[in-house]
Image 1 (cartoon, protein in one colour):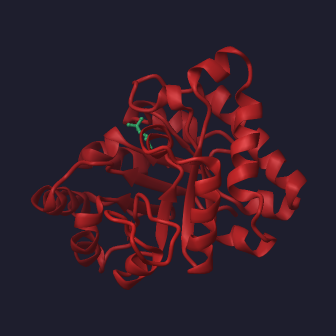
Image 2 (cartoon, rainbow, N blue to C red; image 1 turned 90 degrees about the horizontal axis):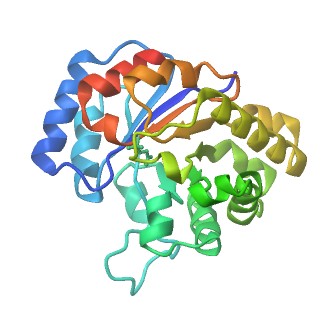
Length: 249
Ligand code: PGA
């Protein structure tokens, strides 16, 4: 059985006080679930969130990290720093990092390698832009992102990989891929991993969908055979909505 996952990406939202408030709300109403639940606060809030959630099944994860071990990289955070704060999972390749911070497939491949070398789990994000889909290049783009970002990994590293397909045109726009579009792409992703590695690895890797997942569309998206959960942006900032999405899985 593949792991079902609901992960909340808070992006650049919530200061320390708001982190505490949101997590308190979340803990009050957290449903029993077999799914893994994760939240990704800003670096500033990571440790506070970790302490607040230590008795709960919710895992605190990071939104980004640098590929270097340490050194003159002003403003950056290393794998070792995250590990020292008990953070074992990191989101890499989010479309906002790619678009606004010039993260390339090559940079991401290095980040992925560093995270794996530190035995971290990676939530690897990728997805096509609207122009790609309109010109019917979405499969090609997704295949290329997977290949360049991840296919240098050895088979055994895949136990530490979670995939998050996030069509850029659906992020923060209120526009969601239809369940059929999500399923079609997730099946393609699984097939691509199976061809490069093995059907065993492809069957085991969790593939999350991200892009305007809300309480009212989560259930239908999560019910697709190859959709193993969601990476949730906006709706993860509201305890009630995030809980409804956890319940949907
Ligand atoms: P959204 O963001 O749910 O606000 O569309 C998803 C994401 O960026 O991970």
